Image (cartoon, rainbow, N blue to C red; front, side, top):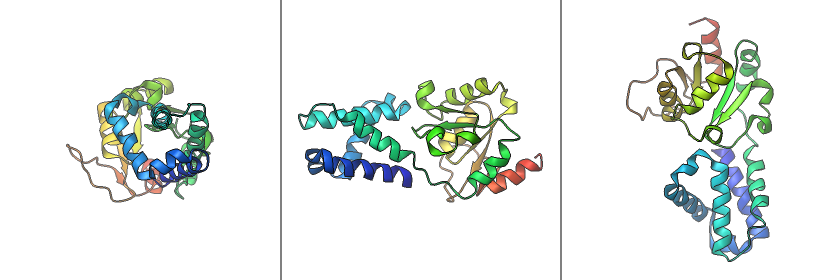
Length: 212
């Protein structure tokens, strides 16, 4: 979320400079509300957040009677800022070890990409909601990842931090999962909590090394 908030502010600052009529008519909070309303009207856009962002920017152009020539530039401002992810301290040390022992795939409902966040060398590939036109907890992304890796459900483990998107999503795909519970999140979905829970990736790595 800090990265997304930074990207949102970066885009808003750009609008203040280059499209002041939009910034003057909308606070950053009002823009967030309009995006939320767009997603409610067009729920299929949850599967492609980049498309949703572009459509929202086009709507803002229409509201002010402007052309859409600047939309791609504005989107790129947001997109590049969105990739400036601050990694947790345990990410690189643990991935550096795991990449030598496992096929690693990154699954995302959003539009961050491993090729732009500095993580491409640690993962074998990435699957996003836009690739399969279905967001977690739909099993499509998990199934696609297993097909690309050439593995069965019994050979797959999903590591995630979101009870619904990650843990329930893995269950929907018939695979095991572990919950990285960094911020003491509440278990807010139906069904039993996942057995394996860790507060950081070091604990995950230790658990994997024991062969549990």
